[in-house]
Length: 529
Image (cartoon, rainbow, N blue to C red; front, side):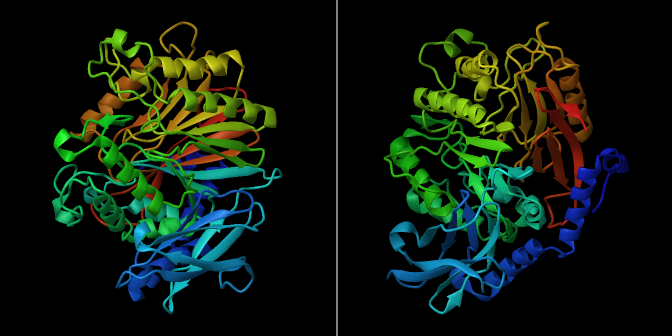
């Protein structure tokens, strides 16, 4: 463990110090989950049949999805035995069975393992052809009696850009209920196409831009050979949504910036990307044609309801190219979510309030807070800024229905942010000091490896200071560091910690706490911890 600034640890409260020390213990392999991660790496080295490890996801109070993939010779179906138990040695078995690995599903298998108890940790394993997978660890959603919930939040892991050290630090944590991945799990570009550090030799496979089902499957397979990513999957249940790079850059309902006519029909490419994502990710599938809906919700006791959105493929209309053209952005029918998802989100928020959840957490891909230049013109029409009616619908509901304690979790932007959410942060209806006029808060995780702004770090730091000086609703910004976000919720406050790895050009186990902010119940406002 290291720190550029010892005051970070000294200024954090007892909870953060426990997290800091707990991570240090995990790095020393003193926790069970670190052992699980080590087992995953060792198993991969000795047995190529389960070369892509194991994973779990979409936990509920009584069940969880278990995942693995076989790498067999031949094309005959293969029976795979699975077991889930209360102990790491898999002796106290809760459920078991047999599932078939098929070439039609790229040899991936999923099990919806039920019969589990709320808020409990379980261990699981697969066996096939006299070979055993690594042992994975997972956890069910907590009961109403739970007193706290803790997530790691990640996004934007570009394989050629650097080592997935942040995934390794997530794997080493013993204090997580789940990992939330907010998209850009893979990138679609060709070798040399985007943010490639050639010195590392982590070149994209296949070497061309991925378009076909075989291409997408191969790219997922490459990413899942990374030992840090395997370890993070083996250590915790994941709850995932896609962003654009799981299909193509700046994707929307009927196309993408990075899709050209010579690459074939967009619907064929989109459907191939969606199919591969469902095969390779530990998600519970819902049969549907095309881009099947991935928006869904999870109940973490009475502490939090988690609402996961799709801001890319489900209903989104095309981005407006000209960031000064407000008339185009306000044109009738333009939407980020689609009418059905917008209505679903509204009802999920109402249901969360009726149920008495302390926090209403929305996991999604794109920055909600306003980002503008010196003339207060939006910087990026791909974000919620470019869909003002969709953002207004959310803000209007929070205000009109007096919904308090809503937390937006965001990825995509390759940098760390904390913001109060208010319809007009530059008006006198919002006070940055007290938070009066703020309707919710937004917490943005940085990337695992994808780069932020290029240039001299000192110049970028000056830009950060300018942002904080000119955008009163922005409470924190760091555009220089890679890592992940830790969100800790209890009945009284939401706490966010930004954890940064020291480097991505070499494999490393070092991280530091970069910043911590809290929002107290009823405040809808962030303050430095």
